[in-house]
Length: 304
Image (cartoon, rainbow, N blue to C red; front, side):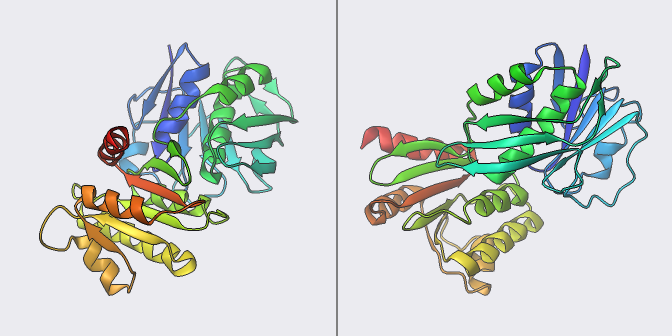
């Protein structure tokens, strides 16, 4: 059975969902799951860890983000396909139409791609629809489409499958009323940056960011999360709430205070009541963190 390993930071789970929706006869790993994988996918814009690369000397193809500056030596391989918004990328996107809960774009294959079956995919264009918004999800789709073509999947199969996929924890709308509540799982600062970047043109009246405590993270990762929040707060002045179950300020709270970022912190149940009482018509609430934060909010919504 052929194997794909997805490495990097941000998008691995979504790409895996996309690949598994089409490639039923291919084993897909998140991270360095197999030393003898056939295809490596570099997910996201962040540089992969060196330890992730040491296993992949036998890969037949590499799929890499053309918009990232990896600054690393790529493993030797027969085929390298790059994807992204760069005009020089092999697989890119144009005519992007962002909707509230979905998006469409034209996928442009700009150079010939050699498949694992020995065939050639010639330059072409075709329309793609995703039932999930966000620029970073176009990156995920382009990476997946590149893999589909390497495995000789036809356009109709890949586009119909992508259009029908649902993505739990990826811009997942868990409540719609006068205001809406959206959950996005955050595993690292790069995912948080991507989510906030995707909201740069959000026309909601007020945007609430509810962050979990990230207590299981190291100090370096927590500081990067605080840095991301500060960067976007300085531009859009979000209403920020942070889970704090203890009596003392968390490290992220301390960092945000140093950055002069306004926020409220409390036990999550109190945060829920405060946000729900504050949100008005046309507002949007984003829950950003682990599955736990989603569970607490959905339990509250089901009870109230």
